[in-house]
Length: 185
Image 1 (cartoon, rainbow, N blue to C red):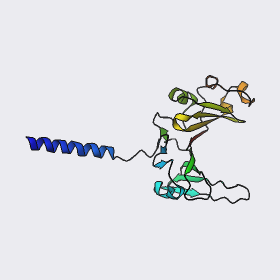
Image 2: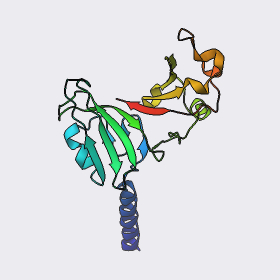
Image 3: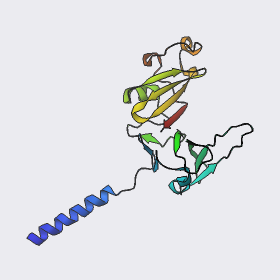
Image 4: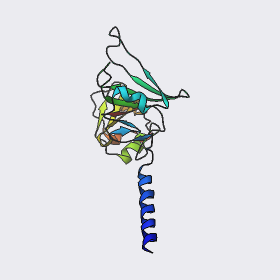
């Protein structure tokens, strides 16, 4: 009886530890990571993190584009997933400073993706601030280190042309679509 109890207990512990070791969701967005990509991942490790995908690194000269070098991540099928921006250009030990989410399969724990609307964001997260730019507004959510860009064409005409206006979340239509979704580290 005692041996049977010990065997069952050991089996249960093994099953529980196996469940914890399950592979992480490659499309989950959290405050410090996106899938296997973390806020401490270095540029030199990007190929290993996205080993099943295609990594495209543009190395810009100083003629027209300055020193910015975006790293694009594509699925093998050619579908674009992410744009990564390193903190330091042309430095393989630099970490990633921002990630632009392209693919709609990337979602936060609360199910926010590039297909979400302003209403989805405002009902799910506390909006930290709204920046009023020339052609868009940027909605910041510090809880997940994210910003959501919404085209001003999605706003009422009274909010589109004056960049000095302070835009309150209640002024933004709930059906306003996200143009860009960025995570900043």
